[in-house]
Image 1 (tube, rainbow, N blue to C red):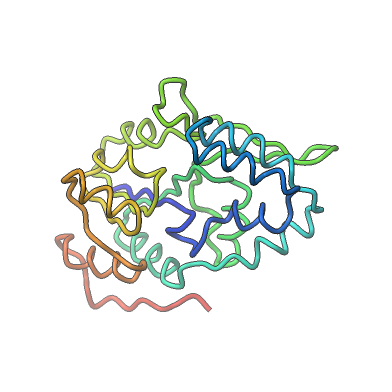
Image 2 (tube, helix red, strand yellow):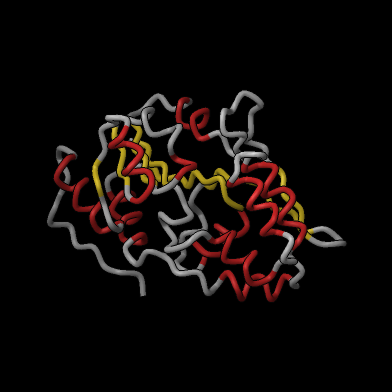
Length: 221
């Protein structure tokens, strides 16, 4: 099995990009955000225009990323998956550098990350989208459907928001909360509701044959 996890609002308690922009970017980022919310631009263009508006130093950026709250049960979920030889990848329409920095706090920066690519230049910051495709209906920076469709093994997806809508009918098993849960319910897409990753771990222990449900799981200290 291959587990794909959304990041913002799924592994973190809030959107890491919005967290950074609201604290460190020129206020013009909000007007660009409004264009995206109104459907005038896709998320890829939105973020490509917003990221260069971050005015802080790398040291300040890193310190601010260190304040982003993580689901306290995600580390144990990854350990459980690794013990069962289940692959875990981060699949996000967010920023790869932000994701890796945040995961490094709990020793999980080694996880594969599929996201928009952040670059530090002599004049500031840039973002490009190597996983975007022109035919993507939402003009996203990361076409999640394309990534998940490539898999030949059973797939599981964990998500919470709008960027997860299009991919929700692709995996064999979907865990959903928030906007994604509402979307799946409206569209009769099967899903398992969850609140945090302890729910996901417990559900997998019940659903997967041959799993040792007595294996101890300890929180990352």
